[in-house]
Amino acid sequence: NRQILLAKRPKGAPVPEDFSLVKVPVPEPSQGQMRLRTAYLSLDPYMRGRMSAGPSYAEPVKIGEVMVGATICRVEASRHPDYTDGEWVLAHGGWQDYVLSDGTGLTPLGQAPENPSYALGILGMPGFTAYMGLLDIGQPVKGETLVVGAATGPVGATVGQIGKLKGCRVVGVAGGREKCSYAKEVLGFDECLNHKSSDFAQALARACPRGIDVYFESIGGKVFDAVLPLLNIKARIPVCGLISQYNATALPDGPDRLSRLMGTILVKRLKVQGFIIFDDYGDRYDEFARQMSQWLESGKIKYREHLIDGLEAAPSAFIGLLQGQNFGKLVVRVNDQ
Ligand code: NDP
Image 1 (cartoon, rainbow, N blue to C red):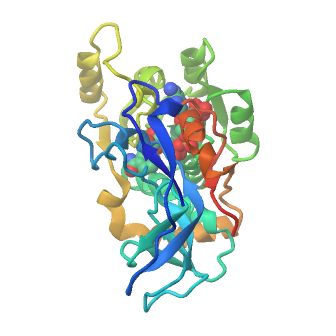
Image 2 (cartoon, rainbow, N blue to C red):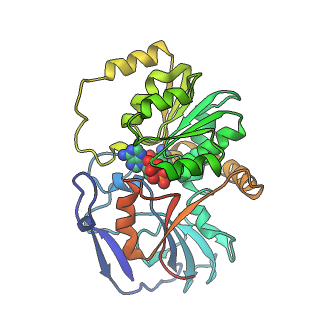
């Protein structure tokens, strides 16, 4: 049983030495338990927060503990009355091959789900985040302009596509030309801009001639700076993430712009609302799952995965996620099915 542990708390960007790989015996279930064998492990930006000791909405991983993460597993050696061997489940097994479970927190996925790993992405936490954040907080209206960052990731790509279904002009922000072409040609965004280009702020202004009505915030930093002056009166900002700041060790240099931000919120009557998906919307999961399955099946929503092979590759893939090296939902194929 391979396990990847948190070896050290990162200073700034995580490095491979912050993780360690150990091998321990395969665990044996006792009565009322089952063993779960990990097929897929999800890598997500929130894991960076769990590596730090600072206060957040969830407990940090302790040094020497297995890194947390959602997993798609198959049931083995079941001694649990409700689960049979071979069945697929969505679990929170963490970065390891095997974990014991008494069924708490598991979502059954049946004996032969079509795309089991989708429960980590479009049909799971990131898809749900896009759906609720955009529709409940962003409240897009036909004809409005929606701007969304990390536009080819599982949250951003889904936000933009739902925005198109609602009749918005959708402008994506992504890192690099290839991602931007994908957002326009495959996902159907009206525009997509590279945040790494030197004239990004001007290009954003040109792409939003009627201003911005909904800014789905996943990035912060320079992208938010470019968005702020373009916001329309009564614009909505679902604050979903601030990935450009996750590795920061101090506040950025430069003048304090808080009063300008507050002034803009006042004068433009902005609605700025953060959310933590399951804490705030857990009771609406079924509504989301029904709607998203329908959109996927009818081809109205497209979904891209970035699959990595082998548990050993998880640390470097995760480090890359925080630098934009993934292209689509980052998932580790841990074991053959
Ligand atoms: P993604 O797969 O989109 O991966 C993150 C992407 O962020 C990278 O691929 C990169 O895309 C972009 N990025 C990374 N670093 C920077 C940077 N310094 N500046 C600009 N862009 C950067 O992740 P998800 O779709 O899973 O998550 C997107 C956001 O949603 C994150 O902020 C995450 O924390 C948040 N989230 C919040 C939840 C909530 O409940 N509030 C739940 C789930 C996710 P590119 O190369 O295009 O720049």
